[in-house]
Image 1 (cartoon, rainbow, N blue to C red):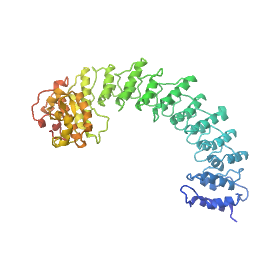
Image 2 (cartoon, rainbow, N blue to C red):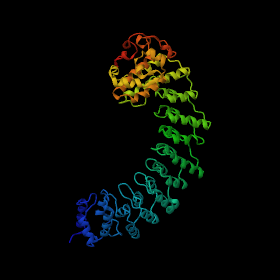
Image 3 (tube, rainbow, N blue to C red):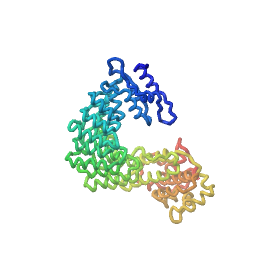
Amino acid sequence: MFRPAEIDWLLIEDLKTDVSSKPGFRELPLVWFVVGSGYEDEPDGEPSSRRTTPLHHLFKLCWFPNLNQVVRDLFKIYARFDVNYTDDTGLSHFHVACRYGLSDVVEKFLEAGQDPNCLEGRWANSTLHYAVQYGHKRVTESLLRAGVDPNSANVEGSTALHIVCKKGKGADVSAKMLFEISCDDVRVDVRDKRGNAPLHLALIEGNKEVVELLLRNGADPNLADSEGWTPLHVVCKRYVDDKDLAEMFLEICDDIRREVEVNSRDKLGRTPLQLAVANGYKKLTKLLLKRTGVDPNLADSEGTTPLHVISKRSNSDCLMQIFFEVNEEVNRVVQVDVRDDLGRTPLQLAVAGLSLKKVNLILDRGADLSNFVFPAKIHSDEDLEGLEFFKLRLASVALIVVERLEKGGYELNRSDALAVMDFFADQIFDKSVDLEGLHGDGWFVKVAKTKMIKPGLSLYDLIQLRPREAAKLLAYSDYLECAHELWNLPWRRKAACDLRLCEMISRRFFPALGAGSFDGTDELPTTDSLLRDDRREPEERGFVSRLPGRCRPKLA
């Protein structure tokens, strides 16, 4: 005859051994044999609750398809419920039954007088934590009716309500059960160790039903977490532009007459609006701006306003347009000349990022150019790696931006021109290409002659012109249009043609750089004033071939 401890050992060894012929399925011949024999564990002498059984071992195994059935079978062997066997970590048979949703077994533990508030030792999880974590509604109901504490927190500070709010589908059923059975006992605003209240977690998950349930049961819509994020911050910080979630949240708060602090700031001084624009969320931005009381000019701890954020964010032209249009619609004035702690205005950031549409939008709203300081460094937010034939568009945009500033009354000076030169050197002429090949490639010549830049001027004709001749025919905006034509050229000649046109447009802006006209301190009032007749050979003109330390493309 085997002693109980020996049976325990044999069953645990059987659980450790996977002899299954089916992927993921566990064949446990010893377990099935012992269950089939009708054997029930009966300890020698007075039973002690401190004991490790196969059920404890099974709890720590990875999931497999027939796991729940194996747990149920083992409870046929370990069928005593007046003793709650607990291992060295504090995990008990009662916890195991709740984890696997064995409602009949749970009822037997409760009938035998076991305490539903017993805590697992390592993580301090209660029986209710396990029941709601794995979505076992019948077990949850039994525990609640037996008086389990719904506010018991584990080592992470999470209550059962926190766990429910982290879940997705079906979480509302468990949440309703907590409120309906525990009545007023559920602490709806308790925060975990990270400062999250259940409402924060439900909003992170995007579970609208649970959000509504929490709000209608007294959740504070302005409670901040450890980062200073209120529920509205959380909505605006999510991974998706969820206008519907924000709209529902605000409507329910209005319905229950709970005021939402729309201008609340987190620990970095950011409002929900700043988080929305930082993420590029157009729908949320529009919704917030239409909300009564939202201040579009509030700055964070670094003096950054929402307009600063949009101005330096890539791919946000449409967002800026929405920002201005909605504020105009609700009669709010946007401060376009405000400076951050580094002294930068939104216009400076837009110019530095070469965002033509943003520059136009800000200037159209009355930005002051009399005190404008041209950025010391301009750049493109776009990744040019592997897109050498994309640079004409950037060169064109850079010079159109400068031209737009001049038309607004800004006077370009020497240091400004050098900043533009540095941009061309760093991002436009950073690699050399074979320009001579353009003329020797019959395929390219044939295609280029069919692409009309203007009536009577083909792409092929254009690249033959001297820069001064091209300047008479083409504006910077024409070069921008020309950039679109390069996409259909033979791939191997795109980069060379692109660079040739970049060189031509740069000479329009810097025709005298090679002659040393920037050696003095003369101001350059307009770009047109820089144009002059230069009859030197192409390789002696322009600054491209004269940049020390830069690649020097051979000019055709």
